[in-house]
Amino acid sequence: MQSKPIAVSQFDGTVNLLKLNLISGEREIIAADTVNEDHVSFGLFELESEQPKLEYLALLATPDGPLLVFDDDVYYPEPGKTTIDITDDGNYSHFKLMDDGELVFGLFYESKFGIGLHPYNRTREDIDFYYWLSKKISDPKFYTTYTKDIEYLS
Image (cartoon, rainbow, N blue to C red):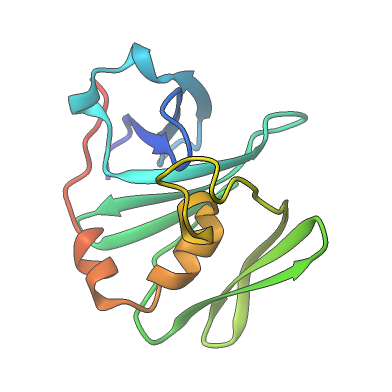
């Protein structure tokens, strides 16, 4: 990996990008119209908070396969080893990323709403990045889909 920033799109919107340097850890939310679409890396992110610090989970395609980035940690999921558990509790859901049964990362997030509000939002996978990821993480196609060169910002 190079010490250059990348940009990935937000899961449920087209207005913001996450600008991220995987080496230095610098990150910020930027307007999507400030980056040429050809320079946006293949990946997605979900933003939980911007204050007091930026809290997010990002998925990025790399030559070594999918990479998950959360806070200052990175994790390469592996088929058969990586699982995701989501527990719903009223207005909140608990996301747990596990590696061979050991917790790698977890977070609580406000339950997503919007199923049926738009023709493309028919299932929970359409509106909830964490839930979508939990369904994809065991699919071998997920690993081939997220194995690509990284597009760095110039």
